[in-house]
Image (cartoon, rainbow, N blue to C red; front, side):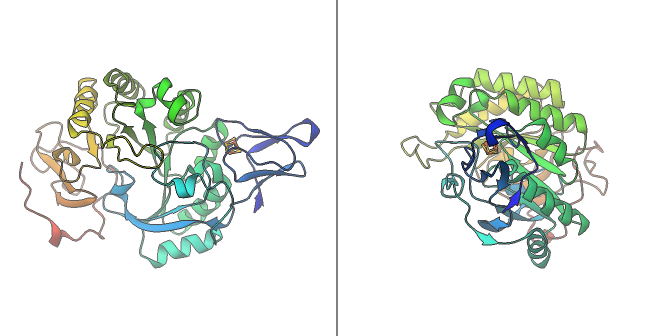
Length: 352
Ligand code: SF4
């Protein structure tokens, strides 16, 4: 536990948390909606500072991040708690556990674990990282000092204060929309009034210019798969982030309170990709459909496969040492070279 930085004291020993767009007004002795920030004696305490509930080693592609340091090994961590109440949450046992639990690990311990497992970075994922922003910040600064990158897998429901704090350490963020951020969907299945703070977060990060951004959109069949909403979102992304922002349309699988829904049909995901491309986005991916041809990165100029993938594995690399297409020379907006942790022995012949 540690005193939080992101809050304001109010009258009557209340505090206003500024870590996320809920801006909880918390009376003495109570916790905010996420369950991990408590008002103790008029001071907001981050209960999960130094408590990690899970840790895994994943390829960066699993976040998903595909245009930043491809093939990197990433140490992925989370605390308990979350600021959202998603009915479909795949990590509900972590996110909806609204109390401080986990293994005691301080920032240098987390960094040592990542380094000792040969990772190139740390991801703050599985729950919303900004609810433990002060802990993430201290890990992230230590990680950077040791040559590691930092990645947020985030719902983007943040504040200008959290966005400003990202400057110190955050290299990359993937912001996850659900149901394309449609208001009826987010009210009913997430428990937020609307998606507006997410757009403000993305704009804020873009304006600061320090963090690579990728976007995902979880397409939930029957209740969150409206093509008009996907078009609106795609247009906003094109207008505000430009044509090169990678966008992933993710397949839903039944989980938590939505076990009665089917998997998203692949055709629905393909239609969403088509709409995004029509709006001018150049790098549009299908996610969670292993073996789908739209897992690959295609050169926008000659249409050849530039990076071939199978699930989270890179199975072919058709870029030169400056990430130009080896077929036509087009410069792709990929940051970093293929990680040495990817064995080229596993590459299949690239077929276009
Ligand atoms: S981080 Fe938690 S306590 Fe703070 S505003 Fe968000 S839900 Fe409330």
